[in-house]
Length: 521
Image 1 (cartoon, helix red, strand yellow):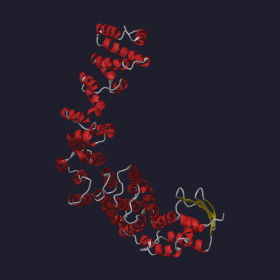
Image 2: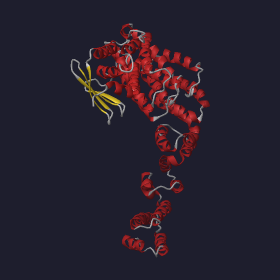
Image 3: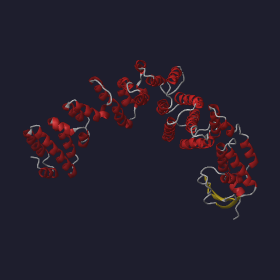
Image 4: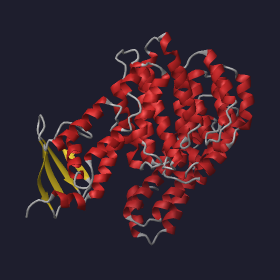
């Protein structure tokens, strides 16, 4: 049967139109490279350089060739919805566009499509790149993203990373040649693109609180960390001051005006104020702006001034400002605690003691159960570095609850409160290996008698499983209990105890055999 391209094009017109819409959005008339790509693709159609070789109906796969300087093979799998090319280009290429336009000519006008695309040309990106100013750089971002972010169309979660990467790939073409300008250009673009895309997500109610977006944000954060280190190693040019002012505004916009995952937005803000902005006058200026911001946001704005009291080493104002903390705000304040460790260690105890009364509701009511253990482990490291009185220490471990058994055990051992240590582990049963991790050997050495009830409990738990393997484990526990009893001078108690166990479980023959092997008398 002869290959009828017109039939194929009409049958798959929706796919062809969708692919051309994507090309239309991602290729920019203002870019010389994109303009050249479209021009050559249109020329290949007019010059009949696009040859449709074969179509496999039952697989819905079309094979085409483009006669170029180097011939290229293009394959369209209509069933799977993808298009590939054998050329070296990783993203859209003129061969793919040429084949799509070759199909499109059977359902529409190629000339009209190209004219419509060129009509979107607003500014010349090359000219903006030569006008080195924050305004021209921002215009470049606006122009690039105007073609990527289509009206009020939502961005699917799995496209977050590729959307950001596409924007940066286009902007990198216009990066300054001078090395001292390049990290600044990249940092400016990272924040400008992030703000633009985040604002679009909020406007279109696209999902923000999900793993795809958080992965994309974490990746950008790592990139910005590298740029910040690179900037710190270079001396600043006088001409760069306006760009630093623009970056300051950009990161403030990210924190205060966008919505979603506020702790991650705060991390961007803290990173720049920790590593990039170092002038005292700039601290005062930003503090004045932050204190007067009145916007609706999911970030607790009352936490932001504490950052600058830390930078300005104003501990009195810091203490005064920490009186109105709410438990739901603790994630933000804990990020600020880490910031204080880097900038002004004397502020860290002030912050941690202000947070202390709110830890219990935050851990047990606000944090998800699967996050609590890891959170307690992390926050305990901060509190271990500061001096707390006895009442504050008890408040801390009470706030941890069952998630802070190990640090509370360490505290009780340090205070030599062994009976309370044993009571804690009776209240929250676990396992013998966990007891050993919490200092069981220390307690056996210092106060062996308090461990006897614990050994008894775990041995009987093994017996209740009623298998020979568990009986063997029970005998191992009883051996440790026998040793502790001897250290405590309770040999008679032990003899009576083990005889009682034998009598109680005399019908469990396998257990009796293991007891005989264990030589526990």
